[in-house]
Amino acid sequence: MTIQLYAFDTPNGRKISVALEEMDLPYQVNVINIMKDEQFAADFLKISPNNKIPAIVDSEGPNGQPISVFESGAILIYLAEKTGKFLPASGPQRIAVLEWLMFQMAGFGPMPGQVHHFLGLSDESDKRYGLERFMKETRRLYGVMDRRLATHEYFAQELSIADFAILGWVWRHPRHQVDLNDFPNVKRWFESLMSRPSVKRGFDIALK
Image (cartoon, rainbow, N blue to C red; front, side):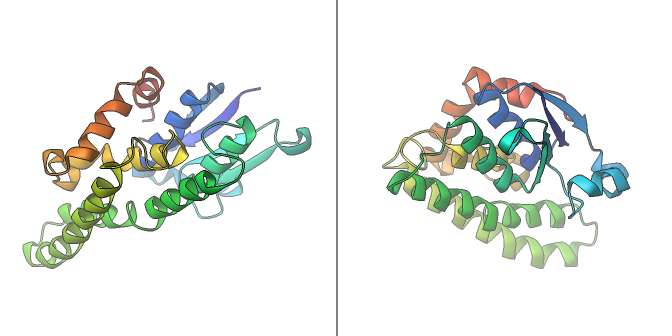
């Protein structure tokens, strides 16, 4: 059984490659070059109705039947439940994992993503407003994470899919124009995760 991963070299793509490596699941990469609009191909639309990466196809899904899964948060939950790893089955720790996963999906992804967008604009007047707005919120979110990690080794006490989700975006901190020295607890957590062999493999695998 080999899971088919459809992805590109983005934070959302990397969070899935890291999770697959940490869960020791065999997978094959199918690069979807979003710079060439390959996400809009009819065949990919069947897998990802929102024309977004990442997506997966598992030939051995529930009841042994093939299944496709889109949206990175849904993929992480699916893989965690499939393997029984990085997401407790019940109780407060499961709730904490889901809280921090939703934190990433709803905030620490969309906000730095807007920073990426406005940094790419050539018109300085367009840039100024967007960067002021979204960089301020991005730094606020780093502060939320730093306070959490001041008292926790990981976001939900034990290593979980929430960490993989957030890691994909902290990986891009230079592009956010954020110095991790300003957020020492995030820096400690980031360096600890990036030193893990499975995480390194997840980032090293070619996604473009």
